[in-house]
Amino acid sequence: MIAEHLLFQSDGGFIRIPIWGHIPLSGALKKILSHPSFLRLKGIRQLSFSQQVYPGATHTRFEHSIGVYHLMKLILQRMLTSPLALSLQDEHFRFDDHNCRVLLSASLLHDIGHFPHAHIIEEQIPLYAGKAVFSHHEELCRHFIYEQNPGVPTIAEILQVEWKVSPEAVIALITGSSGTCFSKLISGTLDPDKMDYLMRDAHHCNIPYGSIDIERLIESFVPDPQRARFAITEKGIAPLESLLFAKYMMMRNVYWHHTSRALSAMLRRLLQDIASEGMLSPDALRDLFYGNADDRVLHELKQLLPEKEHPLSALLDDILMRRVYKRAITVQPYLPETAREDERWFVYNSDSGMRRARELEICQFLNKRYHLSLHGHEVLIDPPSKKDIFDYADLRELRVYPTRSEHIHYALQCESEYIRFDDLHESVFQSDFILAFERYTKKFRLLCRPDLVERIVESREAIMCLLANDIDLFR
Image 1 (cartoon, helix red, strand yellow):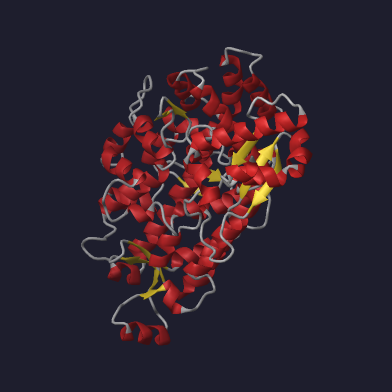
Image 2 (image 1 turned 180 degrees about the vertical axis):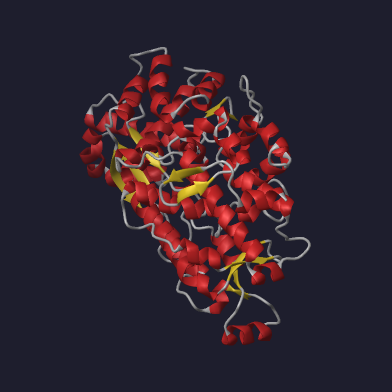
C-alpha cells in the first residue's frame, strides 16, 4: 500500500532540519517539496517580527512544515504498529491506507496558504468598504494547491497522481470544514503542529522554554474513536505537562513579547489606514503580500505608496528602521472579583473602527493638552483576543486510556474505557488551571511613539477613562 511506502520507506534520500535531524524522503514527498508553490514558504518566516528581539528567529514555514509532516508520520507509525493503538480503532476512526495519506499530506500542506506576517494581519484584518482585504491563510490553501506554475503540474495534480488522494479532502482537513473525524488531529491539544513549532521556535530563539519529551508523548498516543481525537496513556501525562508549560512560557517570552507586539500593532494600523484611505487598492495589497517574501514585502510597500511625505510613510519607516513604539499603559483584561473577561478591553479586538477612533481621540487629546501635531497613528491600542491560547475546550475533552490497575478500576466504576484527563487527578494542569495561564498571558496595552510615553503616563487617569468608554469622566 502507498501509505506503508510513505510511512516506512525512503526512496528519495534525506533532508536535514534542526530538531528532528535526518528526515527520510519519498519520491512523492520530494515532488511537493520542490514545487514552486511550496518553495515560496522558504521566504515566509515562522515568527515575523520576533527576529527583532531574537536574531536567530529567522526559520521559515518551509522548515516547520517538514517538521510537522515528520511528527505526523511518527504518530501514524505508532497507530499502525502498537497492538494497543490497533485494538482501539473502529470502523469510523481507523488509520487505514487512505486516511494515513490524507493526514500526511494535510500535515505537510497545513501552512501552504501563509503569506508574510499572516498571523499578525489575521488577528485584525484590515477592511475596505466593509469587506476584508485579506483572507485567512487556511482559506488560501486552495489557491496555492491549485496554483498554476509554468512547466510543472499543480500540487493538486501531484496529490492525485503521486499521493493517491483527493485535493479537496486535503483542503477540507486543513480548513476544518471536512466534517470528518480527523480534523482534531491537525489542530487540537495534541497536534503535531504545536509539538513542532514550540520546540522549533525555542531552538531558534535560543531560549530554554520549549523542551518537550516528544518521543515519550507520541509513544503514549492511542486513538479515542468516541471523541474522534487522540487520547494518551498515563506515560504521556508528564510530557503533556511539559508541552502545556512550554506554550505558556513561549507565550510570555516570545509570542507576546512587547517589542513583537508593538511592531505587529504598527503594521496592522499601517495596513488598515492604507486600505481605508484608498492609498492602495485591495487587489494591490493582496498581490503584494500573497506574492512576496518577508524580507521584501515592506520595502516594496514603501515603493508603492503614492505619497512619500504622507504620515503613514513615517509609520512604515519606523517599522523598517526598528523605531519601536513603547508600552505606556498595561491593563490586566480580567475582572479581579470573578476572573471573567472585562469586555471594556476585549471589545477593541473585534471592533477595528472603535479602536481606530479611540486612537485618534487620544492623539487629539494629547495635541490639545501638550500643543502637539500628532496625526492619529502615534498612539496604538494592542488589545487581547478572546480566542483561546491554550485550546481550553479541547483540553477539557482530552481523555486518558488507563493501563495501571488503580486507573482501570476507576474506569470500570465509571463504566468507560477512558477517563477524562481532568478526572484522573494526576496533574496540576487541569483545564481550570489552564484558564489561569490565559489570564496571566493576555494583556491590554496602549503603545506609543517613544517621545510620548511620559505625557501619556502623566495623563493616565484621563486616558484610562476614555479607553474604558467612560466619556463623561474624560470630558
